[in-house]
Image 1 (cartoon, rainbow, N blue to C red):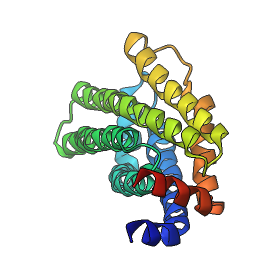
Image 2: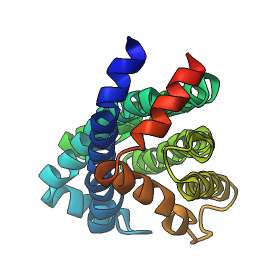
Image 3: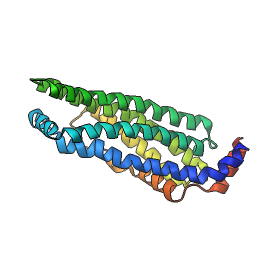
Image 4: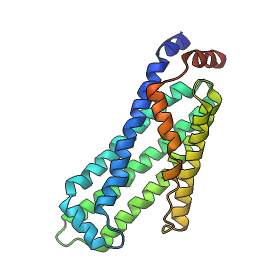
Length: 230
């Protein structure tokens, strides 16, 4: 009965997963790329503080975007588990584990930005302390990035072995994993390295997103795998 219910709905579940995965793009671009590039001036904490003070609503929205993104992340990985578990429940479980480990790290990391706002409310805010919390926030992003990379490894493997999603997407996802891990490793070894590998390797996630959103999965092949694994 479970297989019948899932096989009749799996395409809708896949498209819903794709839609939610797609939502992570604007949330991530806004919070991780746009706001920092707009407000944070490298090597000039005074200018950074001025920008945040004059654009406090934008800074607060970046916190909200980061928190919403993590709630969406939870939904995405749970829907992906439903889709990919027939391939290997162990690998699918690792995918969920790595993704859910990143969620609390990322959410708690926003406390650093909250601390910046609290310091700015004081009569004489300490530039050194504000700089410290902004730097801690960046470290937090890189720590979470380890798990955001690791979850792509089992997901890529599952897609590659699935037969109901093209194999090349699985390969691209595993390459994306390497990009995130390389970024975190390089950041902790040499934060001034200047090259962001995930800017070149993220393609797998984008392709997976749009494939699920537009094509979904091959229902006949998914049903076959579901029956085999039951």
